[in-house]
Each structure stands twice: as C-alpha cells, then as structure tokens.
Image (cartoon, rainbow, N blue to C red; front, side, top):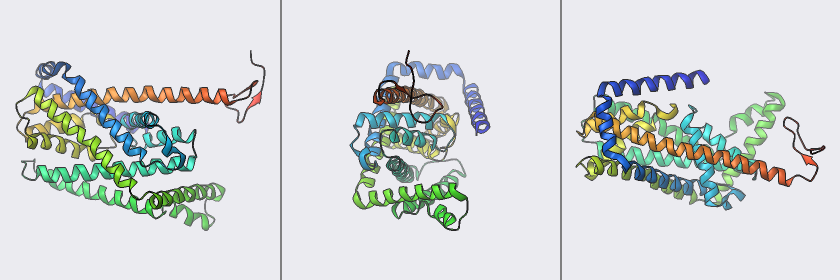
Length: 348
C-alpha cells in the first residue's frame, strides 16, 4: 500500500507538472493573479459544504452518538476527510479514523454502524447527484470520443456496488459470509470473534433502519446540499474571471469534473487527475485549457486548506481524549504506554 501510495503521488505530480509546462506557467499565474483575494470566498464556500456534510452524517449516527453536538460531529468529520484526502484507501481510511474517534466515548458497535451508514449516505448522494446532473446537463455536450461509454459503464458498476451495500445493511447481511464460515468451525477463535462483532453491527444496522426510516433520505439530502456548494464555487470562479456565468455553462463545468472525481476516488489527493479533468471540462464549454487548469488549482488550494483544518482538529481531539483519560484516573494511577490497564506508581 505504501508503494502504491508513493507511485500514485509521483505519477500524479508528474502529470500536474507536465500539464503546467504544456500550458505555460506564466499564463497560469496570470489567471491566478486575476482571481486574487477571490480565493477566500471559494475556501469559505468549501467550509459551508463541510458543515452540510456534518449535518448529513449526524443523521446516520446510532445510539448515544446521535446526541453529539454538531461541532463535535464536524470535527470528527473533518478528521476523516483529511485522512481520506491524503491516503489511497478508496476513502476508507478516513472512515476508520471517524469510527475510532467515535468509539472512544461511545459504544464501539454503535460507532461502527454509524460510520457504515454515513458512508452509504454520502456515496448514494454523490452517485445520484453527479450522475443524474451529468446526464441532464451534458447530454448535448461535445465530449471527446469514448468518454460517454466509459463514464456510463463505470457509473453503472459503481451503482451496483452501492445499492448492494444498501441491501446488506438494511437486512443485516454484512457479516453473512463470516458467520457462514464460523458456523463451519473455520478460522478458529479469531473468526468466531469476528462473527460475534459483525453480528452485533448487523443488529445495530437493522435497528437503525427500522427505528429511523427517514434518516437515510434526509442524510442524502444534506449531502446533496453540500455537493451543490460546488456549483456555487464554479459560478463564482467564472464570475470573477469570465463573462460565461450562464447556468448551463456552470453546470457543465461542475458536473463533468465531478463525474470524473466520482470514478477517481482511490488516488491520493486526486493529484493531476483533478486538474486534467477540469481542463477537459473547460475545453468542452469553450473556455480553454488555461482557465481549466487555473480552476483545478483553486479547488486544490481550497481542499488543502480544509485538509489542514481537519488534521489540526484530529490532533486536538486526540489531545482532549488523553486529558480526559488522565482526569478520570484515580490519584496515584497513571496509564503506562505499552501496558494494559492502570497500575499505581510513584508520580514525581
């Protein structure tokens, strides 16, 4: 995985450098200078989108975690976002981070279930919003040959996986294979333990869908609201630098780029791909490759800013958890790294 991560970053960075060299650094810099402080509103709009996503995930939480303050949910969401953005784990690394942070002060099974439902809600929202929006706005667009078949076939494959994920969640079948193997005494105690945990998660998932039937659709709507902020970003960028601010042009730029993003989720930082696809999108609407690369880089600046905020929040959450653990220990007891349990010892 480390080799894949490094290879992906090197290849992505090489693609980005190649594109910059082909178009011309001075032309690109001219476009970014024209944007100037206009980058700040773009970053702000990205933050609003994250707040909407935090609202959406909060609807997916299970058990006591549903009562968490929005600010806490937002911080955990941002921690997961930063890990997802920086690692080639098909956006799963950040979900593990979110589950770990949730489980510190809440039931571990409920934390896992909340993360699983949240992942499904976001994936469904992205698939529905981007795919339907792309079909409606790009149907008459002059796309390069082969793009439509590739996008449609890839989206259909992705859709089958997401709706299959919904089925196994709703009917408690997430651990069906593990339970089948455990019932045949395969894998020993380790598999038996895994079967016990997946069964508990399946029970929480069934309970969630039975007790809160409207929460998944509401979460999807919140996530779509967050994604729609991207349309506002595209409009603002075009408003600052061009005269092409019609709804049709803005929608084509946004949905074509987002459709490529939907299918490139395993590449760390989406390096090179994001910029290349925005070049394609801007050339399709007749705005040129320089403008497309400039737009791709402004999105990069916004994403890196919020990734930094997420990492700071992650560090802050870990610090708070360490302090709360120390406060909860009786006087004279201190948790020693590498030793399970608490043992009394002299405190200097």
